Every structure is written in structure tokens, then in C-alpha cells.
Length: 94
Image (cartoon, rainbow, N blue to C red; front, side, top):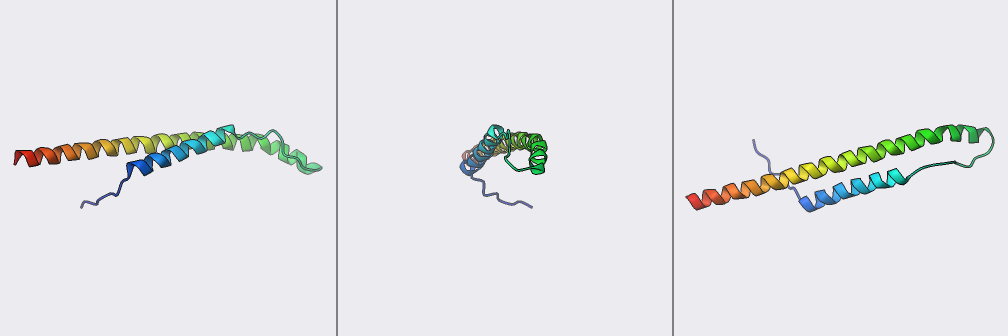
């Protein structure tokens, strides 16, 4: 069973770029303090490291997504080109 895929390399490349941009943004996001009053300040201060760690993880995940999407997109483009070459060869040999 074969299914056609409506693959638009330009849009996929744009999605990879957006994931990469999101990762860059997460990398630059660092909290040093969150102003609050009283005991809430202590709680917030203890969470800053965890928040920054999550931002690092988001940046890492975004980079992985961007890389994977780019690789799949390039593979699809290569397969499309190969399929077109095969189709042209078949037409020329008949």
C-alpha cells in the first residue's frame, strides 16, 4: 500500500529554523532572581537553578529537533531527486 506525502521542503526547512531559533532563545534565557516578599523569596530563589536547568534542556531538545528535521528533509529531497532520475531513465529507455 502506497501513500503520497505532500512534502514541502521549504516549509520543513522553515520549521527546523524556528526550532533552532527557539533553542537559541532558551539558551539566552537565564534567571538570576525573581523579586518577591518574605518566605516566598526563599522559595523562588531555590527554584531559579531548576528553571535555568529546564531552559538548558529545552535548548538541547530544540537543537535535536532542528537537526532531525533537517536530516529528514535532506533525505526526502535526495529520494525525490533519485525518483525523478529513475522516472526519466525509464522514459528514455522505453
